[in-house]
Amino acid sequence: MSKVKPPYFYSWSKQTSPLTFDVDSSTDFHYISNNNKVLDFSSTSFQASFGLKNAQITDAITQQSEVLPLATPKATFKLKDDVSIKLKNLISKDIQGRIFWTSSGAESIENALKIARDFTGKDVIVSRQRSYHGASLGALSVGGDWRTQAVSTVDQWTLRIPGPETDPEAKEARKIIEGFGPEKIAGICLEVITGGNGVIVPGKKWYREIQDICDDYNLILILDEVICGFGRTGNDFGFHHYQDVLKPDLICMAKAITGGFFPMGAVWVNESLALNYEHKVLPCGLTNYAHPLGLAATNATLNYYQEVKENSLDKRILFFNDHLSELKNISSVKEIRSIGLLAAIEIDSNLSWKDFIQKRIFVYFSNNILILAPALNMPFVYLEEGFKKINTILGD
Ligand SMILES: Cc1ncc(COP(=O)(O)O)c(C=O)c1O
Image (tube, rainbow, N blue to C red; front, side, top):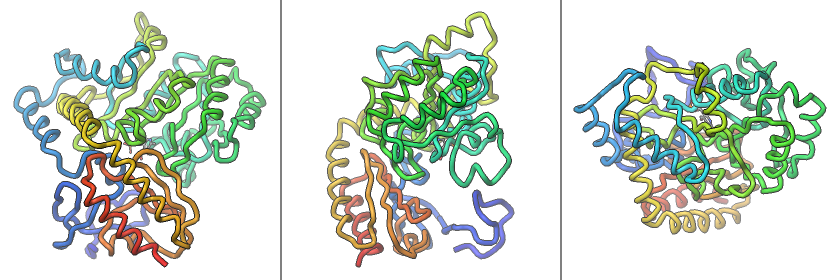
């Protein structure tokens, strides 16, 4: 652990007691820390879905840097067209939509919130009590965990509803929305499956009612696929599990869109909203809009993801879930929830994140909830290594 006070901040930490570990380099799936291999079992912060090294993606960035390493947002070029079409098709081949490029998850959320508010002329956004959408003020305002409470946000424009864990048919959600006055509400913003806050997988009834509420009152449905997107839950996108129920208006993406090798994000905008800007100015823009290096990384990631799907992703998911079931027998394990290669393990113990690092496994761990999200291309031998370590750490 680093002892010298650094000339930079540690995020989300008291600066005198941050959670850190030294990193010298990495291999495909391990950080190298003081000559030790530390297995990355959470795809870092859910972005490294294709490993910590991936020549197919990083070579594409290098090659693009020789052709067109940066460009004005005004630039039109083939890569921009091609990747936008590819991404649109991955979301849906049937529903028409357009892509607004960003550089992070929070920026995707911010732009989606702006478009929903601009389109409806209303301010209030409904969001789930237990959720996270990013650290900028708008995104933080629609989030619902300790990070929202840390600073003053624009929370006065947020209406919170309970999640499916306490309101499985969204009856309470409807009551809250109708009680508040749907005429003041622009839309509903939801992580399709809550990620960092505990892998809560809604049943179809919950989403059916949410979609009905949106239809009844013309509310814009904003889906946050920042964690769920690109195969994490076993489908291309989380909402594909609810394909027959959900009709999203805006879909926010980031993280694994480039495997984490370039800061990139995107918002898919349903054509019915996109048409609003044919003769009206789109009030959204970024200096690094559709950055060519990010587009090259996204393109290579989408190609690589197709290969992963064809190459045993299903088997990996089965293997992962079989090993998860075995953890149920450990007495400190209270509950396990999972979908695809994403799992939350609620435990009853005094363990801290450092206990995992000491056993050379990097996981997402807070409030006694362990979140596992290994890379989608992680070889079985490393998946096995991860579960062995977790078994030892949690073991009786
Ligand atoms: C579900 C979800 N949405 C949005 C974000 C924000 O993404 P970023 O940190 O890239 O701004 C995160 C970050 O963890 C997230 O988990």
